[in-house]
Image (cartoon, rainbow, N blue to C red; front, side):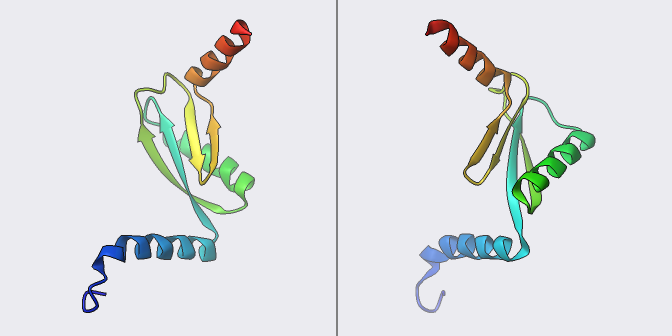
Length: 98
């Protein structure tokens, strides 16, 4: 790629390669955002449920986000599971305003 002056497209090629590898290995990246660090038991429970839901092996990427009041937000591809207290408060507010 360097010899042909194609290094600018290398990040896109790498992303496509990782996506192809994950599809062949039947794995998916799952991002978990929580207000506090999750313990190993919580991570394992989420991994088991997500593997069953997605019918694939999962790789958990845990992140701490102070905007999440409590609970977790789980993202796997275009699927989002928002189990945070902030989301519940927004839904309650919408119901009360209507």
